[in-house]
Image (cartoon, rainbow, N blue to C red; front, side, top):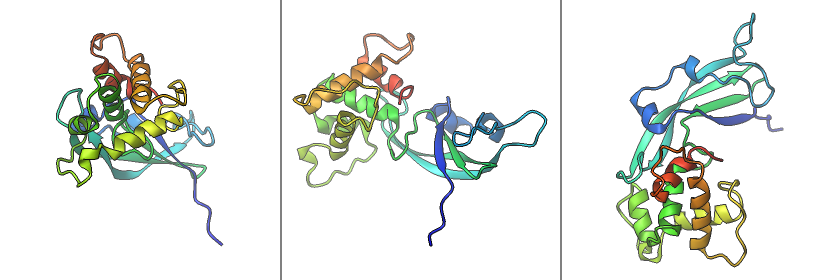
Length: 206
């Protein structure tokens, strides 16, 4: 009989990948306030720690760290925690998304370049992906971008984006997603640069 695994979850901090790389936040700084599984406080008053540090692990993050900057592949050390209930948590940079190697910002950026700036899929890839060696079918587009558009269309990526009509093209789906993400960017982001606003806003929304 297979032993049941303890619940796991990823918690996004309010710290960007760029700041995280400059200095890894301390265990105390990233300790979750409560366990997302059982609600146990991380540091309950008058008692021992409810959520303890449980080591670190590498996490790959792809894409530009700043809008328009050269795409990069960086490895960040994310912190792990363990609750009294047995649940484990990983606290990661703000742009991290479960099951995504690219940052949320990079994905928002790519959707805006494709849907708003109307760049070709290959041009979007060159501005988003750190990989410079392309396969034989690279001239047919970028499969990763197609997967992101499909995930948006089906609500599996950025579910806060309003559902698109079934007859929308891939560019139209990407455009709707990008303009929605751009609306989440703070007022300090240049209002006339929707690609930059989508990059910033994507990190702030699920």
